[in-house]
Image (tube, rainbow, N blue to C red; front, top):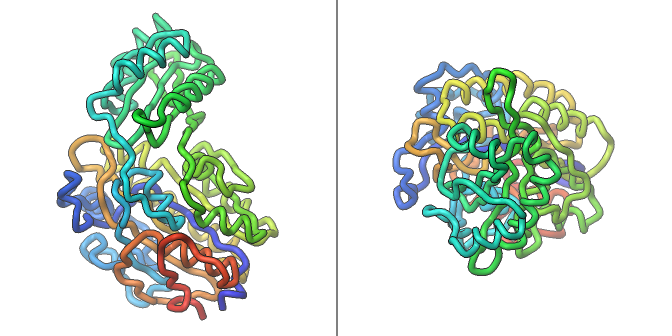
Length: 396
């Protein structure tokens, strides 16, 4: 019964899409299938995800991971919003539809903006182009380290990314620079996120991005699942970049993580605490370390690593807990380019009061997740701006 569920944990396996959306061709993503194409190139061993029903989701990996009698509820969700970026995906999961896509800058940012940015930060910049983050720090790293000019780049997403060697630009200075960029990127220069991308250079000369990334997002224009649950008097416990994505709106507690594995550990620690409300976790390594870098083998190994720890998560859950596993967009590691792909996201739901083996089918919006969770945590009294709850289908 929904009044017996006191806490919901949502874990986003960032970018683990399960096949192209009907409009994928309009985004240049026809034929994309993150999970399926990983399986084509790597023999995934994910017994725990399979047991919940991952392979039973409509068309997921061509049915190759299907099991008899799955223990969770399972389904896939279409994106109603315009876009395929992190903010749009998470906001829609939380019940907010984005009808006007965030502005992108495929030819770099306007010169007048960059001139003002350079003036305000007191140092120059390099790049101002579409690039892979790992590649551009190699391409421009020497000049950056010699001149102190920061590296600016973007992608198919609405992002203004600033990379710097922390031995050249200290972390707090990089954050200050990102704050200036956030102030400038409004109005005609609107941008979804400014991202600090610090890196270090080892004795071997190899440049490695650190875990001190920080996102500076815009605030959601309406109340989301996080606001509604918080205003109802329940805790909203954000793990990973969740607080950044929602610009802190509706967040009670925010916990930084170093990696997927650390994110799982921090989620288990939250589950071991005694509070009612929402635990919302993003595991970004799938996307940042493997999807964007077009590494299907590494991506597959990361899914396996999560699967191996899934029993720990399930074991930490109390009788009044519910777990939702999902993604937020795709990032097919064999697709051209380095950017997200327009795909269905998966959804798996389990808990003591959740039915076993129910097929949610294909839902029309990610927001059904937020509507369901919000209704459960507010005793059926509140709902999100968009989305239709499926609580009555899965609760026992």
